[in-house]
Image 1: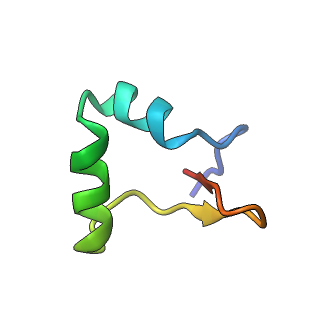
Image 2: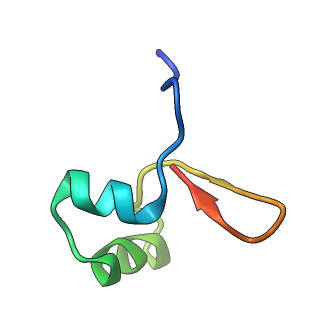
Length: 46
């Protein structure tokens, strides 16, 4: 699998997928969101 050249913010992913931020976090609660990493300062990148 190819790795992306850059990680996206939650808002960038939501814009790309055309979903609301609340939908993304709903997916996250259900463990259905795209795979991401949590940054040391608490941010999330996909």
